[in-house]
Length: 279
Image 1: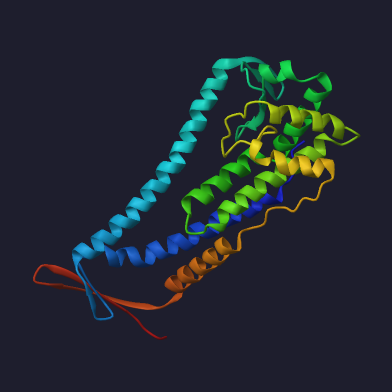
Image 2: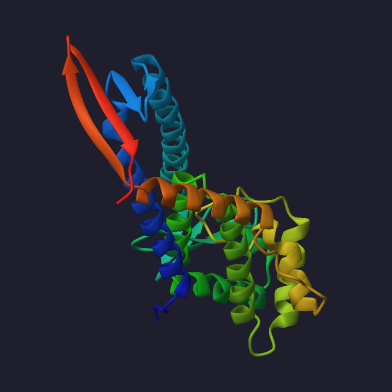
């Protein structure tokens, strides 16, 4: 059964809203910056200055796209490696050869649960059943898709740094919720044994787009929840929230403030005359 997940709408809305804001700035100011000479409120900006500015924006954008493309390429390579290592496929569960105990949910349009032969050898039958319930929660709630949308949003819009904290918070909370599902009906002691074994094992290769029961970055918080210890969820860092809010104000002002633009051509030189004006 596929279950609705509010985070799908949250991250999708953030992606669309951020795209609209960035697009608004680009559409409004890029035509101005590409001119050879700019007269902005009687401040002359020569061609080289605007080219340097454009080169800086292009570099930041290029590095961001490289980071995103690199992650997607790693996912593609990893998927091919898993396909080569596949031992069996039963319904939505794929078993692959691997010494480390690993279990995760991966796939966007046709997600599946992946478990390694090392995990099967290390766990008892009741422990394996608990692990499968945990990963089934991720499968039912579209978590691989949401992780992808969240990572794209975080990568494309680094000027909103609160997105990093939001992604970390989401990852931990989803693992906790999957643990709650897996430990239902009196299976909490079994899940504790599973997590303890995973802590003692070599950490698996963690990829930002893959929810996994063995994600070491989330184990401490999850064990505290299971054992009833005081656990305070990591909230968004106030510095990053304030910085993101300031960037939002700057972008909003840049988009909303009215600018009058006049293009002139004199002796083969294209000049754009732009300045703020009151409506």
